[in-house]
Image 1 (tube, rainbow, N blue to C red):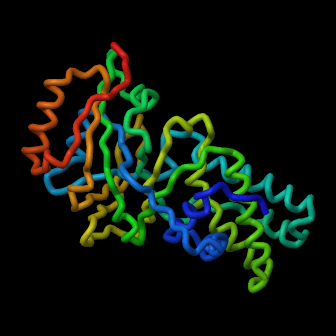
Image 2 (cartoon, one colour):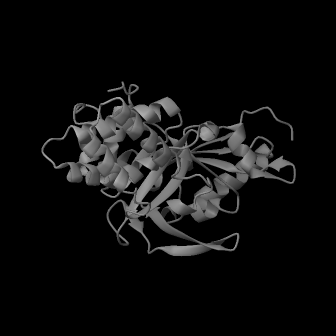
Image 3 (tube, rainbow, N blue to C red):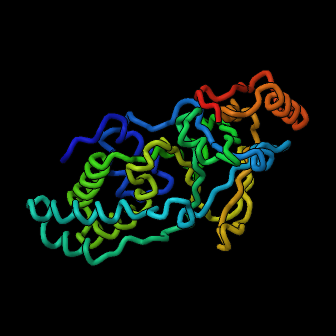
Length: 303
């Protein structure tokens, strides 16, 4: 099997909350590795939306139904690569005809469960990301830094790092197919059924390379019902108007406000008044300003 890049197998092990037993088995040979994104992740937003996120009673994050995300090719990367890898492995004799035919008969389920996504970036200060918040010729927006290290305590939310590199995608999918095919404890039909059940979940991690500048990290919510526990409260699925389309979403409020670590504001915003406004807002909404880093973008643009 192809070699998986360092750390990739660890990342995939974090899918245990959303992938089936077969997918977890792909990486059981790496028991000491567990993917946890260390450090802050950043959510870019506007001045209008910031007060809807940083509430007095917690941090509200909106999770959107993955089928309604901005990337129109969302979920399309995996099926095409999966099919090409399946054919290549069959033609090279690595999988037999029975397995190949059975896998081809099954279609990848595009709605296996109610999956909702919240998008973040590894990059605190990114010009391509600020470009999304260009208004009247000026950059107006905020990059909010959060530390979700305790997210691993939650059964139905995962922290996943998006994969952009095509070779990495091919290697991961090849390993997944081969592990399923080599599982002799199951019949061929069972092997393929569990392989396909796992497949679409993995596609949530794969995006086209043209989006690589986003350096995206995703929180993936596997929604079953609204939940209220010691860490967060999830609301019922609701809908908002997105260019005339009813877009499903689920709002999740994290109760520990100390997960909010930093706020970087756009490069063309006026420093003194921007920081005065932020500090005033944080104090009035009971945030500890001494533990929140406020800074302006270091990108040298004038307008």
